[in-house]
Each structure stands twice: as C-alpha cells, then as structure tokens.
Image (cartoon, rainbow, N blue to C red; front, side, top):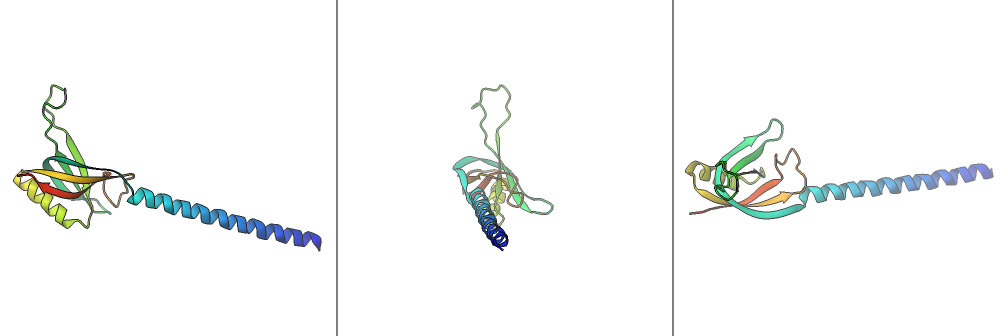
Length: 138
C-alpha cells in the first residue's frame, strides 16, 4: 500500500513539473516570436530614385522595390556603379505603393522612411527593410 501511494505521488509531481516546463517553454517561444516579428532593429531615411517597385511571390505576394542612392563619387572605387537599396512594403500600405509607382514613372527623387526588422519572414517580404513613408523631393 505504501509503495503505490509513493508511486502515485511521484507521478503527480512529475506530471505537474512537466506541465510547468511545457507552459514556460511555450510562453518563452511566444515572447521570442513576438519580439522578432514586431520588434524593430533600426529606423532611418534614405533618398534616391525609385528604380523598381513590383508585387512578387508565388504563395505570399509582397511588394518589393529598389532605390538608386546615386552616390557617384562618394565611394572611392573608380567605376561609376551606383549603390542601391532593396526594400519591402507592407501589403496593407497601398498608399505608399502608389506613391512609389508614381515616383518611379516620373523619375523624381524620393525620401523613404523605413524600419529595419530583426528577422525576415517569407509572408512579409524579401528584405528586412520596410518602407513606412514616402516623401517626394521637388
């Protein structure tokens, strides 16, 4: 009789600990995912001319773009290759996409405000840089 009580106590105690460890790990995983998904690493502004803006992807359709920074002479290399900035636009930001398309067609310079995310997820975009605002430079 004493052996069965001891065994039952051991089983209930170990089951409680397993549940606690599982719940703790689950909460830690949720916190880590939330931090990496919504956390921003940096914010900034870049200016140049929009080279392209397109909707890409087979399963996850995302807006991807490229900005020509036009830094001729700023770097020390002898070739005249301009530097480019690859960026993504959140799918719900149709106003930003429209402004980028108009600026791309007109060839005018723009200033892009962006947020750099910690981790890139395939359903969000191909880059870690997400444009939040576009300002046309006259």
